[in-house]
Image (cartoon, rainbow, N blue to C red; front, top):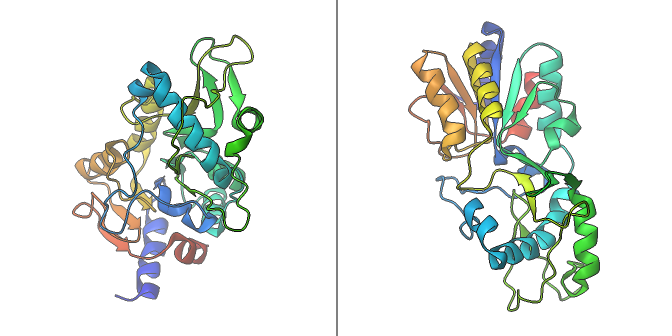
Length: 278
């Protein structure tokens, strides 16, 4: 079956189901200049992610995170929604899809105009104080980090390597000295700051999980876009749909954890497929 035939089948899929839940992952944002986590075989690239309990327990881990985040965040801050993000927003307005649950933390769905949206893993553009729960804009924290650690500002002039950002705002960068790095602190209470995202090793807030599961229960079909579903928090929605005999379609380059559950799979980039569904 060629790509045009697969798109025809996707059109039929959307027409036949009134409440399509769309589940998106890092592959949706690669065309916006944000690298994804995994290769086509679903194998994770780069270093192991920082674990939430380690971040909160160890100042050394927090220094390492914020130094790498300082290098990686400009990529996310400068990213703009791509045509696939806008297509999903238009499909929602047209009533072709019902809602979106995203595993991405880049905030691009909101900027593209999607309305019924759950950011399952949070949003990298916010920073929360673990002591007083004040939320600070991440851009404000970036400015503070640059002022306090000017030698690490990722300017990228000729001959200098700009670190590769990760989808969570981290970066592939090695620094010999972390102990002199100045950590950000809460301007309201002086407390410990953490990005307002779900770290590996942490649980999604119960209320957010409950709302997402309610949307999954109300849906009559699931469309996966740009996700390998290797992380259980995303895979569970495909598994729940399969258990309820709800059809699953996917637009994804490469392997997914749910390949045996997916009835229609288009192995192509979301930017090449989603605009054609309009």
